[in-house]
Every structure is written in structure tokens, then in C-alpha cells.
Image (cartoon, rainbow, N blue to C red; front, side):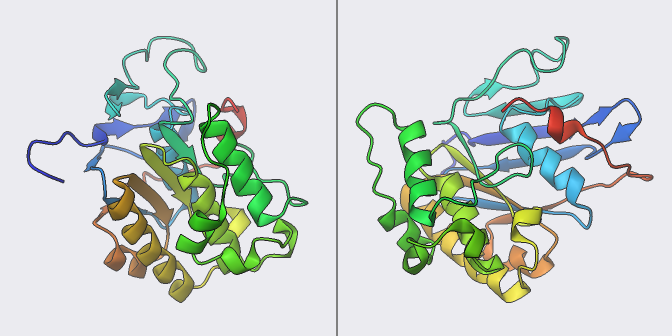
Length: 240
């Protein structure tokens, strides 16, 4: 990121808690256009919540979070579910259980083309093959999602997040959708993401528990994980 450019995502000391549930705490980071940030956490929930916060679907309960010039913490006094939301053209989500699922009966190409149309409703392209090729999954374009192996599912999730070239793409490599993803496959995908982000000047944020994936990223964030960390249904309550 050039010195005179503002980061696409900027967070200062953001935390999230809800009733007895405590998630990430005091996270500070920035991600510029063309950069890939890895959010590293041994527990899935804090990293998932942080990515959903960047998408405007979970509002941090303290700190400041600005995405593409929009302060997502400014309306913190409003009830959950109200206030600023980011458009699909600003924040692209990969597969998130209960929040952004993918239909298992769709083919890979159908799923990504649909996301492209949703993000570019006025004359935007819905040709998914170039993006699938960039993510290394073009050869699986005609296969149903239900038949994919973990590595191909992870690449599909990345393609869904990148579809339509949003300002920031959010990918959860710890989601149950990609269960069984190997460390080598995660690292190979990270290299694809780094190249794509640089070429198209996108900011990419990836949640993972795989430390080796940080080597292919522009930067990494190790989340503070308060104990005890209780499971919560907050993701189920997020607006679709």
C-alpha cells in the first residue's frame, strides 16, 4: 500500500461480546488494496466473528472499525441488526455456515456466476471461468458443490468472496464447509489469493488456524482469545 493511500480496512482495539459470550478482544490491524491479511486463531469463533464484523454483520462492542470509508461502529448504540450495512459490492463473503451458505446442488460455475450477477446487477459480467481459473478450480466448474473435495471447496469459497471484485473479500478457511483442508492446500490457496489481490487491487482477509498460511500473506493477526470461550448462536442471528 502506497504511503498516501488509505487502508480499505482499519481497526483499532475492536472487541466483541454479547451477554455471556466473549469473542475477539482488542484487535488492531489494517488491510490495504492488494494486500492479504491472515487472521490466525486456534478457536474458530473469534476469527469468524471478526470477518463478519468487517462485513458489517457483527458490530464490535468496543473500538473503531472503518471499512471502505464507512465507520461500522458509529451506530453502536442502536439495537443489534440496525445501522450501517455494507453493500455486496463493498464486502464479498465466501462460505460462512448459517450466514452465507452455498447450495450443494449447484455446480461450481453456477454458484460463482450467481454471486457475480448479485454484485454487478447492471451489466456486469457473469462469466465465472476466469475467476475459477485464477483460483485453480476451473476444471471442477461443471461439478456439483456436494461432490467437491476440501481443497476445491476452499477454492470455491474464495471465488465466491472475490466474485464481482468487491473492495474487501472475506474467506473463512476454518468453516465446516472446508473441513479436512490440508495445510499444503491452504498454503497453495493463499498464494493464489495474494496474486489475485495484487492484480485487482482488492483487500483480502482470511481466517484460519493454520500458522503456515501466514507465510504467503502480506500480514497476520493473532487474535487475543479470552477464556472461557463459550459457543454462541450469534452467527445464526446475523442478517442474511
